[in-house]
Length: 186
Ligand SMILES: *[C@@H]1O[C@H](CO)[C@@H](O)[C@H](O)[C@H]1NC(C)=O
Ligand SMILES: *[C@@H]1O[C@H](CO)[C@@H](O)[C@H](O)[C@H]1NC(C)=O
Image 1 (cartoon, rainbow, N blue to C red):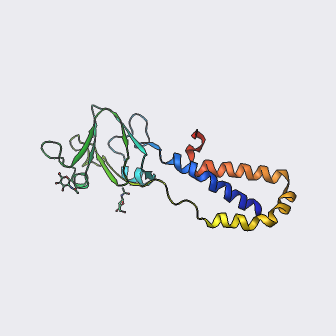
Image 2 (image 1 turned 120 degrees about the vertical axis):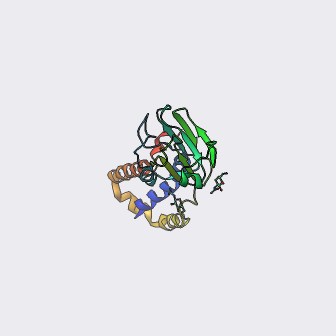
Image 3 (image 1 turned 90 degrees about the vertical axis):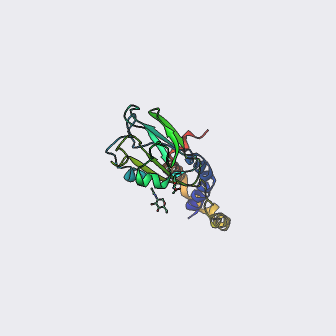
């Protein structure tokens, strides 16, 4: 019992670091370096496998003579029709072949390839971006810590060094699993 309380308190202290870094994740769209933005990829499935928060970055990598990236509004995403001038419902155009797009706002983003037929063929991506940060763990955890302190000293003395090593390893594992970029902090 005391160890689980200590683990909870340490996690409470470490969580803000985790949250801070988690908001700056970078995603190669389609997961394939150099050509992740391409025809024949199911971007709806790709988007479902990830969560996006404000500050995250999408990297579109593709052959620039074959594709491009247009950020569009929802109706143009659905119709795939940017109009005769190629700008109907278009918010931004990227053509470099290595385009980084910062998801700066908590909203839906829609992207298409504007090469003829590519969007209609399925080369389109919609992502929902959530506000970064949350309320964090509930204050009830700190409450428990205070309650447990009175009788924890005796129990801790009996737990031995091995218990502490196990606790430390478990904590590191938990933190690394929950925030992959934690190791890169500072
Ligand atoms: C998208 O942009 C076009 C062109 O400006 C506009 O007609 C259309 O209403 C917009 N759709 C949405 C959902 O904002
Ligand atoms: C984004 O959120 C809206 C509203 O919750 C939902 O209808 C839509 O399917 C979501 N889109 C994606 C790509 O997850």
